[in-house]
Image 1: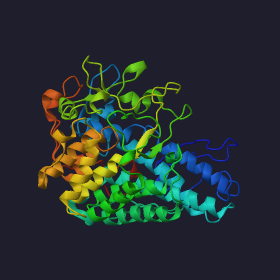
Image 2 (image 1 turned 135 degrees about the vertical axis):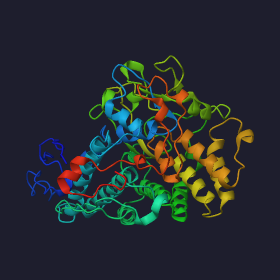
Image 3 (image 1 turned 90 degrees about the vertical axis):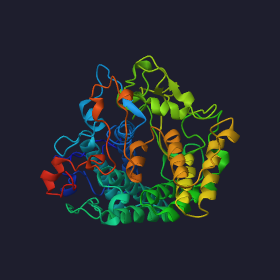
Image 4 (image 1 turned 45 degrees about the horizontal axis):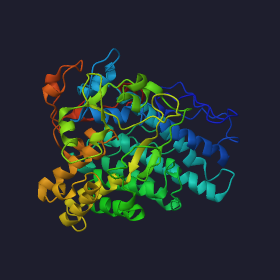
Length: 482
């Protein structure tokens, strides 16, 4: 796959240019000087900073993954405009991806492995680099944590969920060295083992959080714990999901949850565990995340809420999340504007991108306990109600008291409200094995045939195929069903 030429250091020490279409089989030829780059802690740190930016690009968390998660689920739809939906986004919306026409899947695959290649260079060379031991430890910890996160996002996008066939399912090609050639796919069990090994090692290397304003723009020890809780939830290891979610909750506590009067997605708010820093230098403008949902000031605003989601937001009295609805391009109040540009920012998407928040940990703890971990349903209700209490002015009326499957569905509904447009959406349906039902009358004026938007949880189209360019270049095995 192509490696982006990108000057990460002012002196031009790095060039990430490559000509091969297959990064998994490429031998690194993109380093100007090993003495100046790979043997310098300072320069490897610059490469790490550059990799954070790669993760925030529009072909990964800066748009594609979050937008796909939204429009492939039940709560958002496209509204047809002069330019949108883009053809590759329309393909995803309709579940019409194929290996040769994979919509945004190919771009996400390529961008993810760009980041992994950078991280492998750091991980493989940090020990021998010149610099302080403390700096080496911090850089290595962050790099391993990020690699685990990127592989996890690839796994939940390109591999069938754990609920389908467990560890025996097809996993990912695990490229763990900048030098090695990898074309064989691991099992899903091996893929998750590697993800968790990276995260656990990162956890052990990183120092405790200081919680100074702005520090959560880096992946920290608490951020890694939050990632582990998320990964274990997808793996259906509810005991460990609860364990790590509780550790994060213990570190931060209810006092740091956003409240009815403070539910604003400004940078580094009290719930922030890890967010990507977006400045005027790396803002993506109309290609960035916020511009996809907000039509103000030239934003595209091509994704709006469905009636189903609007009804969900209206269930509680004075739910601050309903207050995020604004006027959309159709003249209704279905634009869900979660990401607000800074007043002094540059571009239409001048806002940080939340990756991990405290509220997600309460919801993970609730779901894990509802599946029998810890104190079971009573503990699940405690975590769920703690969040609900901060999302309505009439808690006594709306507090959760359900049990069994109804409780699990209540938690799932709360995830939809709380984590909308944060990269969960359709993934929650897929990992839980739930069919995606999208009523025709909620998907008008989309530019697509709304009669064929439902899809069963077992359908292969719920995940991305490996791009044909990768298959042709490496001979990798295509995903079953494609």
